[in-house]
Image (cartoon, rainbow, N blue to C red; front, side, top):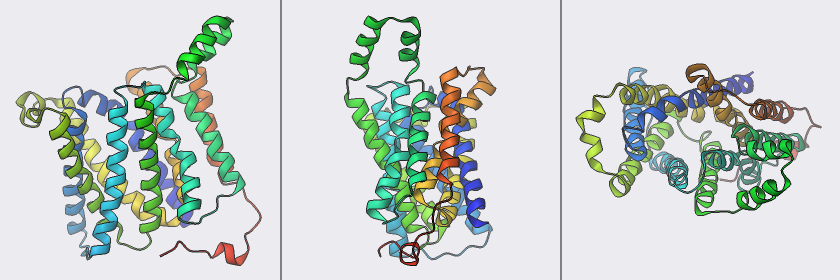
Length: 324
């Protein structure tokens, strides 16, 4: 029962993240990405700290908890920062697909770092989810069109051009590594430390690093510009992303991931672009193509396949614990 409750909560987190894409897109047109992240995560850290006080939680933040939360924050910021920089040289579709490769990287790292050997259905589910992400992000739309039109010359040219790896792709691949490691480390630290402490320290770390990145790569004047703070889209996006999409979402991830595996969490989070596409259709009328619909179906099929029952492990394997 706890596992199903954890899956439901984490699926809710993926839905909230996906649903905020439209809001964030409007906000960063006024407030640059790193500045937006800095304010968003600062508000989220303060909000979560205040919630903990109201609930009467007096968790002790010892050195190990602070260090663990900081590690999570570094990996999380690395994912956001590298994805943002990568989009300067690559396309959103390619960035979305490469970021989604974390769904395959997590089972691998979970095996290497936590010694959680993924089952065959888990690997197959990750593969289906990766294929679904490829279709959902639109990376294969142009190739599909050329196949349909029968233009072999154009298709060959597109294949050559599309296969050219660039610096943006490399940065986004590093982003996927960071997100995968954030999930892995959460799986490692969540059972050992207080969820609220981990979440607050993680979020505060992202805020500090985002302010530093904004100072280096953006114009700090945006942070004090009246035209920015008087904009409704900016405030609405900050409030929604700071509270439900950051403070509550990362608290929920930290609290519930102890009841499931990192590989399964990665599969659940693979639904984020699907929810983003659906909410974009609902709010802005952006249409979903046939390949996007197939991609969404493959992601859900991957989640179902990953839950496929297998032969029980031996007692030794079943009781294996992550290394200290």
